[in-house]
Image (cartoon, rainbow, N blue to C red; front, side):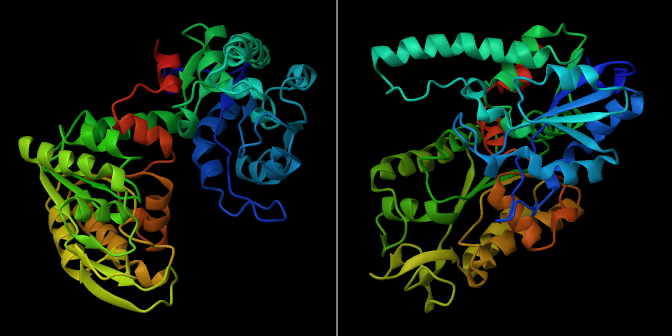
Length: 415
């Protein structure tokens, strides 16, 4: 069922949103992007004449009540964004009365789902790999099923609109759907946009296709890199993983971050890139520092000839030009991960060069998808968010989709 075709009039809809927003020490929302992202779906329910029940997680309370992670803190923000006074249920698993009392045009927010271990479905307090763990896991699966059934009992229909959790098989994302028929469960507008954006990059590629993968470690991105090597024309690898590649090629990287146990993996990536005729773009020079801080002493060094006591902190000037050249002619662009320690203003040059090149290519007709928290923070820091095609709200979910994995939260709706 497509949400645009569904009429919520007279129905209670339970919507899985991602309201895992950042809070300051006083519990004030510091960035409401995720709340605003959910508004098209939430307003559709209310404007159709339905009753709206919202459920979300916040942080990692690990199955225990932690009031610093209570969603009660964001009720004013959600109320203001929605334009209606949002009611609050203090216990997500015991909200039958609040849900039953909800009238059409009204909205209710449930307390943090992860206050219950049943949401994530992980046994608590049992060591993994033991017979006790296996028994606890089986018991937890039953409890998770009951938890999902309880949540489902509050509503007539279910909407999955939390792409950031779509890669998790949680009660509220991939179990609750079992209690709704195919005509009463659907993806929300935000989820549809995310799924379509990934498809535009991986399923409907316009060439040349350039992917930019940053990050500190090869090990965390290897699955994605290997999948991309069968799809892209240009693959830019930047950030901390630069120095694992430089070391693998026989270079000296000083005290730069480097995975010594992944040198063979780096060499294998280089080999596969050649076999697939992929233009692999690696950093040739780096902005190096004598300390990991913004005001450290700096020098430009070849990425494979960094002196002892110095570490690579950002892409150097020659590397920035090479990155920009691989981006500007592209018609499909995927960017995940910065080119340096962009949190420090003195080491933002590489990431800014990427961001500007992506914006220029987009202006010239490319489809650009930016995903992952750091990349999104980059594009926002440089004021270029409105000059790219799409910014994904999902970090881990986007990466797993790029890796070619089926997302449980999407599969649950489509099966």
